[in-house]
Image (cartoon, rainbow, N blue to C red):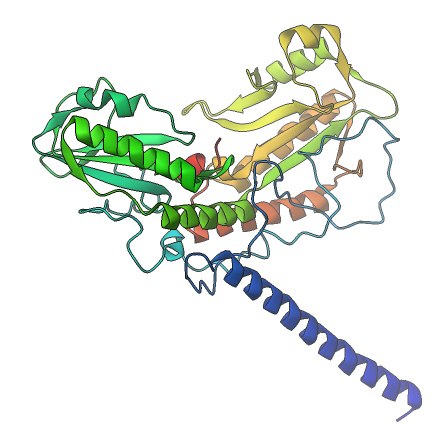
Length: 403
């Protein structure tokens, strides 16, 4: 055996050992972050996602592509928007999360019941619509009121019109045991009332002070009926809210595909609006063109200005832009992979129509291989959401990833 062969063998063994040590260190770091995330609730949560900084409304996770050898063909232009496109960082979540999340949202709850109520609301099955079926104890703080006699929705006016800083829902239980979402014009009488406060959304977790305000509101409504009720444990519910917000921060993914003109060329706003509307987009109040589902009216994906300026009818008549960004808000759409395919085709068509190039956030061209890589990340993200019983596009997902 020559010295070269021996050296190669030693190098190979060292490489394998290095990979094993690296994998061990990564797993150790993730488990430590998991323990920290659930320390407040007393849960071990061995398969839960790692802890991340709160405030997911200000920093979203986006799929990324590693650097390639493809030369840039787009000269310098105004800086790309920071909330869209494909960034140049190593992609860790949610691909890191998939395969590690094996528990559902109820596993985040402390061993004691999440809400101290005489008759807790049942857990909504995955895929069921909590707006229709019942309260959702996995993502809501629930206080049940037990009136001395059946009450109408009109007697809950103070609660139905209240605002406490997070979405608030009221349900009534009929004599047949079924829950019904209550509105001011809901007919009938109800033997039990459930006040439900969303624990987290893109605005962050519900604070202890907010939960205390919710408890006072429920107590005030209970006194007016009158009805018996047990207030929630604000400290424990706030801890649940923080854990839920950290979980959702790991799963909050938006996809961006940029269509950019080359050089210093721009697209006139009037031409852009004509092309967008001919492709089926509608100008929305949020300053973007939206592609809507014909059956449900929900937004599948949007078309935003490459510049950090909203699209308005007036601005489109007077200005131009170097490009546009196609945006897919993954948690809020059913079948994200299929929706991504539709958005990708729309982006390619628009790039062809505007004589532009489909690029990532660093102005590197996106070929079919790069787009296939992004699609794989979309599928992984959708699987991670489904793995914790947050089906993309479901009422639960729309609640958690709204605000």
